[in-house]
Length: 329
Image (cartoon, rainbow, N blue to C red; front, side, top):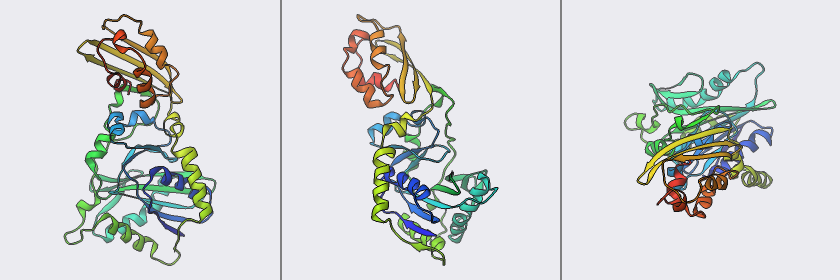
């Protein structure tokens, strides 16, 4: 089994590498990697519904869609991600896959004196507190399972980046379960404190330090393929937001100048329908604003740009484009 310890923390590249390692080579793989602050959403989630758009935008946090299912997770350099890729066993269901691939991780943590266990189908917990979610993807006769482990992550940033009110969105996309979480570092026995880098080295030695594992990096041609996947897929708005399921958004807000209610219907990431109603005073018809927004990508920058080009005081009163944009997310 190949052992790959990645040094890059670019989330776009790391998710592209996951796809390449599953589909582009034949060898089994064990991989350890980390991402800079980012939100990683599940394959079939509504990205916009999962994030606090204002927080993510203001902090420059990228949102990246992965190829596996499950819920949205916040990554930072206090997280350690692990991946196993191997042959699919005939008749194996997803629950069996989770048991097979989480077993080495659980064993490694217990070697540190941390009483980790698999709870439910795909969560790793210490006591009743979750520190890792796991997801799988099958491609032909190969299966990839990866997990994100909180070691010394910023729980504050985690909560803020994913802190949105799901009731404002309607649709059939998968919404994340906000479980109580904990960091592994908080449960290390006295005298066994370590840095996240030490933890990665420990996992590498414990899991891949046995016969049958070969440590190696990427070949130049492999890097070229991953670079292309990054640029053409994983860093694109279409993959990360445009592939969201159809959804609706309904929000209301009372400004000093009046009450406003907005409703959007979004399909394939594009605003297909926009309705703006309220008790505000106007000198130009609101339908002009609705028409300007209909057909745009439902992205913060696209909406802000369109609203900034309009004389909004004529439509609503003394409102800033940024204030109205925030109401549409």
